[in-house]
Structure formats: structure tokens, C-alpha cells
Length: 157
Image (cartoon, rainbow, N blue to C red; front, side):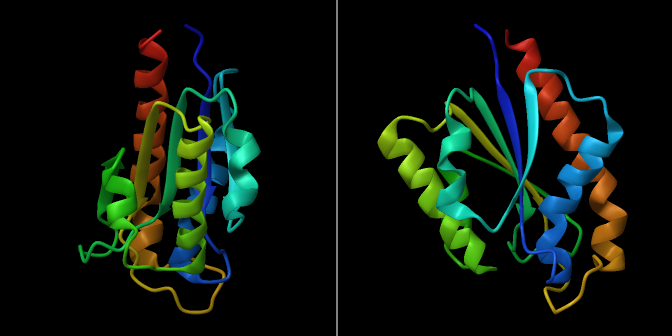
């Protein structure tokens, strides 16, 4: 089976650590080493507007800030049904959109069989264009985990 992997970076880059998913996708794309079966998309805060991008995707990797009351910069990995449960306390309005996207994808049959959320515990989501120093120092760890996800997914062929 051919795999099609979508890496979806979410977040609002005007709210410091809230934009880390978008920053991680930028770094993955700038690295220039993504295989042809992989699309890295800046999903920003689009929510349901991202539904068409799920068509034909076998593996969905979501990169986002995730508040699970861990120390700032902690790498968080959630899969399947654990994702909506973790998003119940809202960090940001785009997480409402992510829950709707996952529900609509499931309802329409376009939700990929494998859905993983990789994120970092934010330190701050105040107004500002830069990540906090703690989260910025952990961004490479998130990007490396995303690259590992891609490698593992391609090995499933």
C-alpha cells in the first residue's frame, strides 16, 4: 500500500508558544529532506478548512502546543482517541477547530487510520512573535520526533 503522510503544523504565531506547530513545520520544510510521500502543511488556525487536505492521507501527524500541565518544553505524544480527550481543556480557539476537523474527518470517512499528535508543553501563550526560550530550545526535539514518525510510517509499506 502506498503511504501518503500529512504533517499538519497548527497554531497562532502571534501568541508565542501557541505557534510552535507552525514553526516546527517551517523547520521541517527548510530542512528539505522530506520524501515525496510527505506533505508538510502550515495549518495555522484553519480548523475545518483543512478537511480537504485529509483526502487520501494514510498517516496524519499533527504538530501543536499541548497543555497537559507538564514542565514547559516537555515532548508530548498522543495517538487516536487520546487526542480529543487531551484537547478538552482548550489552550486556544484553533483546538476547537482541530476537534471539529477530527470529528468531521471521522464522520466523512476521510480521517486517516493513523493519527498522531506530537507537541510541546507551552511556557507562555502571551502576545509575541517569538517562542519562549524554553520551548525554542525543545523545538529540535519535536522536529526530530516528527522525522522519526515519517521514517516509521514509511517502513510500514
